[in-house]
Image (cartoon, rainbow over all chains, first blue to last red; front, side, top):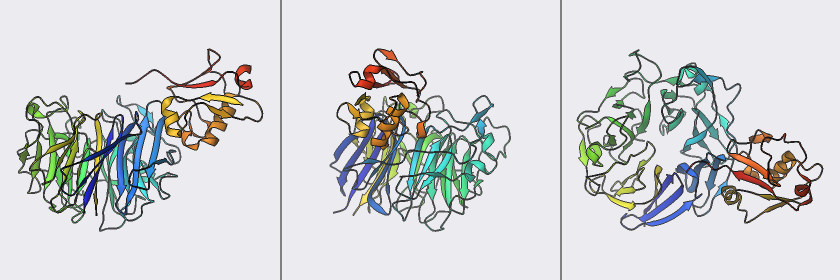
Length: 371
Length: 98
């Protein structure tokens, strides 16, 4: 029978939540790596039992864990992330040059077809690749080195490379997004890069045509239509129909266009989900009501999804990597909150139930659809 | 035999139940102890000091014989009771964070 495995990274460990295809009853495993921050856990699309986890702490730095049995057991693999060549500088918050320093891995993106190949997006923003199951990591230096890198500045959460999208139809095309530099595209497996931010408008950037400096919070793509990209920016929800060459705003009737995650329905490429947050100063839902907003038209027209979600006194946030969709016939949607809840909807967002209510703050949510 | 005590989160990472006992050939220094520790438990590389013997991580401290050795040169000899195995070499996670 089909099922799902939800991988939740939290401030104090990882949790694995499993259910059959009904997604009504859940088994909870964890905490794995108790006490450590788990920024991200993700499974290989090519091997459901191969999982990678980013484990870190302020005391002891970065560890990468790998599982070859679907999270039953784990082993630490390589954790040396060395920028290639002379790292150089980016801009610090005050505009002064600041040396590139590795802090942590924010996001792990396994290859679509090789379980041993995985990409890592790191802070300070850089992209690394392992072709040996995480044992060793090599930087793809052209992203930092294509020319705009010295002008990048960190967002409030650090200068992180948080999104990696791999185009399943055009070999070699990939996207990366960096806070607060913007979106970038490579068409040759990361050997060369260029910014793809035309059409983004960001208050605080005086140049309306600024090539970089945009605080992109998250990108999403449907695999059947990879030229269409959706973006949750610091403010504004955006869409590109040409692989990032240009962007237009699709915030429409959202109560706030500030937020972090954005995701796409597994079977409907024009069905998109966001979680509006009040503002950059108030990282909680408007009016204390936790509402996922769904557009079935690829943006502009949004409907609130509230059934099963708290509609009063709710002041949690949903972080950028904390939303995912499964690919069962009735698409499941999942998200985790900074209050420690992981919510699941087995019906494309129409209704929601908490899988767990009291985890540590949830940093990331991924889901695997199991045969 | 050198006795080494690790903080709980590193014992968990390396799946160590209690003290680590190391045999060191040559001078017993902080560097030689950490080299031997990382050779036996490679997953600890980068979690106590930088890779390839780099500097101590900011929130890790080294104590022995009621002394803070964190700022001592890494090639200085460790106190005789540590070298003799009567006192442990303590690797400490600083009190910070939540």
